[in-house]
Length: 304
Image 1 (cartoon, helix red, strand yellow):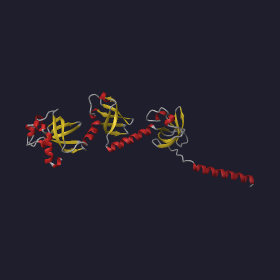
Image 2 (cartoon, one colour):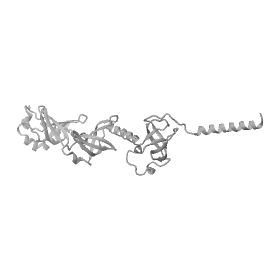
Image 3 (cartoon, rainbow, N blue to C red):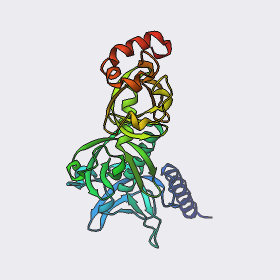
Image 4 (tube, one colour):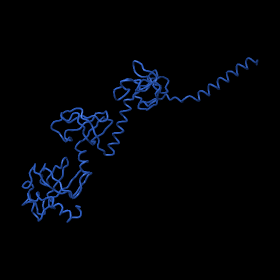
């Protein structure tokens, strides 16, 4: 073997080892990109069809302009500068050329759904803005997604058009990402807020909104309390309709609260000076209800 051959072999060997060392320093590329996978990439260039991003594949990935953001972008170079590294969501797997389709918009939407799920899990109330109406209720903007509040779960149900652009405090009724369904209730949020201000032994005034054989339903500024027939008087009551009519104002004391079931149990019999006074002199009982309530709280420790 001559010196030229040895020199040639040494050069090849040296080159191969150097090349191998450099290869070890390069990032390990993963060409098995899957739809729904979150990848990190760098903005490479702006083209007519969209933004090309280097995500470590054999070809650059494409971020179509409509998928660049959930909101409107006025200046791409400011929102997505060249060589900026960030996360993207794969919304289409590799085509024949090895190109995958990316989305920032869908990634942001998924992150919003995650935040909404946390709100629902915590039972928290939150605010939304009314953006439209239909015969069933109002549509609202909730962190750039669209939600719905049924008419039956609104406090103001008669003139829905007047609610447009108003901010409502609501709770979730239904949250389903798979069905893209967000249904909320203003009434439940009001009840939750109202319950936090209530206490057993508290005297409230409300309007009678229903008279049933078993009791009287009383509207308490968005909350509904039940004055059961056994709590009306210390004397037996045969017919509630002879004592109460829809629209009447009535004062009653809270004797039980169940926030989980949103139940407020009321009593007027604790206000009586003698059994049957509510049946004979209801106006007198109502006029002096405050003083009677104070006396009842002192007499009944469970109402304090």
